[in-house]
Amino acid sequence: MAKKTYRNKGSKANIVISIAGAHGVGKTTIFNMLKKKLKNNNKFKFFPERYVKNPPFPFGSKDKQTSFRSEIHFLQQFIQRNKNIINFDKNYNGRIIILDRTPFCVLVYSKSLFLREKDYKLISDMYYSVDWREDYIIYLTATPETIMKRIIQRGSLEKIRKEWNEDRKDYLQRVLYYYDKLLISKDENNRVHVINTENLNQEEALLLVEEMISSLTGYSFKKIDKQPPTQMTLMKFIKNS
Image 1 (cartoon, rainbow, N blue to C red):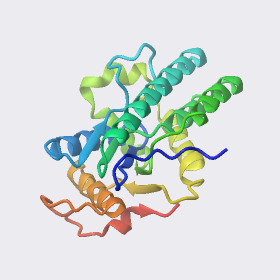
Image 2 (cartoon, rainbow, N blue to C red; image 1 turned 90 degrees about the horizontal axis):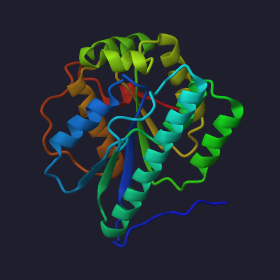
Image 3 (tube, rainbow, N blue to C red; image 1 turned 135 degrees about the horizontal axis):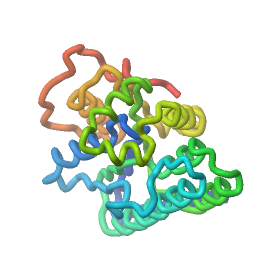
Image 4 (spheres, helix red, strand yellow; image 1 turned 90 degrees about the vertical axis):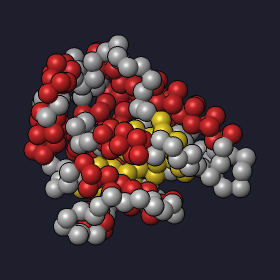
């Protein structure tokens, strides 16, 4: 059955773009940098990954029951966010909506955590029952070694890191594998756009995300502080799926 398409009342539909990637790659940092830069720009609307600051279950747990509950919780948060986006859609038009994470990550992480098949099926059925409001996904990636270094740099979050098992390289590798297998390799409609952040600092990655948003929406960022010192073009960082 074809999914419904939500469109707003105006003549120009809003465009919804998720910033996605494995934990530690820097997607939330880029999301917050972009949000701060555009805080006074009414053209943009930002939605966080979840509304509960302290989740009731640790993400990434080795315990299958705990990880199942955490993914259900995360999915519920995404469903609530999706409702909020649809309500925004009904009242505003011509906006660019930026999301921290894609709802699809629930399927990626559920696979990565080796959930029991019946538990994964329940999550998958719930996911596919929702008409997600999402037009494009900007997927940030890097090698596992680089991402692990970025995770370690979060000194203030060391306790949470260990509780969520973000210090496990094998876990990260599985997440990257399933993003590639389930999301990128099956992208038949050119919705997923990959940016390799391997040799980029935060400011350089932000510039490429801005350039990608411009390419997808036609919006021109008027103020660009600096170009990446390598002078490499965007396409050299884009991996064709």
